[in-house]
Every structure is written in structure tokens, then in C-alpha cells.
Amino acid sequence: MTSRVRERALLGVTGALLGVSVLAHVQFLLGGGEAFWIVVTLAMTGFCLTSSTHLMGVRNAVAFLIIGVSLGQFFETLSVHTGFPFGPYFYTGVFGRGLLGIPFIIPFAWYVIVYLSYVLANLTIEHRPIVSGGVGQAIWLSLIGAAVVTAYDLALDPFMVTRIKAWVMENPGNYFGEQFRGFAGWMLTSFLISVVFRLTRRGVSVPAASLSPLAATYPVVAYGLWAVFFAAAGEPQGTRPIAIFAMGIPTLTSISGLVKWQRLRRLTDASVSARAGV
Image (cartoon, rainbow, N blue to C red; front, side, top):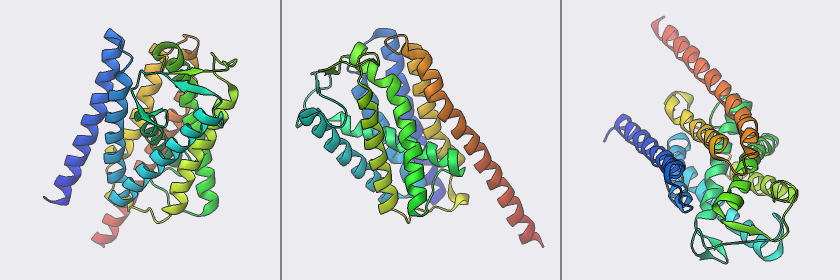
């Protein structure tokens, strides 16, 4: 199988997995069913793994998966048993059993949203989907990515507690039942997942010419579609306009970065072609 055929096959699988996730959301809108998030998380885990394989190679993609799942499991377990960093809560049986009181899909959900935010942060700040740089840059991009993740959580957490009833907050807070400290916990956890990956895999570097624009577009589309979903189906309904702006802004800024990256690619290709013709 040639590299071009492998690339097309990988992109096809990535698109198909995103399609499965979209269909699961549509099925929920039409008929309900709290367990639909299990299908969504599994499909999106595969989506992110194939997407990251194309963008950063197999080893880096697997490393991101391991770091995301491991740290997601660690902080979820820590919070369920100590209250830090999200506040005291416990999971119901909606998502089935897991490890140490954490349903098995939850650590994978952390990997998914942090990976999407990783690409969005890169596009927004550096105007390219993959960035390999110094410590300061890794910290800054991880902080931006953590904010993108937490914007998603502004819609997700109330939805999961109110509509899906996936977990119960022992001390309900002022934000649709969520404690404000929980958002600080989301910032901390997503920041650490991202920064650990960035600092331990600083050699991540793929020539821009070898990347398909579609591969870089997929994560932006996935995050943007979640913004649309929560804007249409978020519960309580007061979270719906929050989803539009909180998730819409990083979606639009990453689209801008994507356009600039593709424009630069075209200019670079034209320059190379011109030099080759001289």
C-alpha cells in the first residue's frame, strides 16, 4: 500500500468515526437514551487516535492517548475520593462500572477533549496544527488549550448532571449546580495533560507539505459540532447561549488559524515550484 493510499484510508476512517459520533448525537436528539455518550466517547477516541496518527505519527499519537487516559483517570479518582480538584461527587450507574469508582469511558473522554483543544490552540496561536517548541511555548499553548477545554465544560457538566444524570455533586454549586472550583479543576487537569505531552514529546514535527488540510480540519469540525449540539440540546436551557459563545469563539479563531496555515502552504508550494522552474 502506497503512502498516498494509506493517507486516504486513514482520513476515510477518521471521517467515518466522526460520522458515527454525529449519528449517535442525532439519535439522542430524536429518541433520547442516556447511554449514547458511551458510543460517542468510543467513536471519538478512535477518531482522535487516527487523526493524531496522521498529524503527528503513530508513536506520538499513542503517547498522547496514554498520557491523556492516565492523568484523566488519576485526577478523577483523586477527586471522587478526596474532593480535589473538582469537588466532592460520585458517578451513577449510567456509564457502567470502571476502575476505582470511575466509569471506563471517562479517562478516554479526557483524552478526546484535550487532544481536540491541543489542535485548536496550535491553530489559534501558531496558525499550524502541530507545534514543536520550547518550554515557554509549551506552557502558553497548554494554558490556551485548557481554556478551550473548560469552555466545553461550561456546557457539558450541567448537561451531564441535569439531563444524563451521569454523576451527582454532593455539594451543588451556583453554576447550574456545579461548583466554580470544578472549572479550576478542569483547567488544571487539561493543562497538565497537554503540557506533559508537549514537554515529553518536544520532537513532534511533521513537514507542513505532508499534512492533509482535511486532517487538520477534522478536530476543528468535531469541536464545532459539539458547540452546535450543546447550543441546541444543552440542559438546563440557560447553558445554550453560553455554549454558543464559549465554544464558538475558539472554534472561529481556530478556523482563522486554519485558513492562514493553508494560505501559507499554498504560498510555500508556489515558491518551491517557481524555484524549481528556474
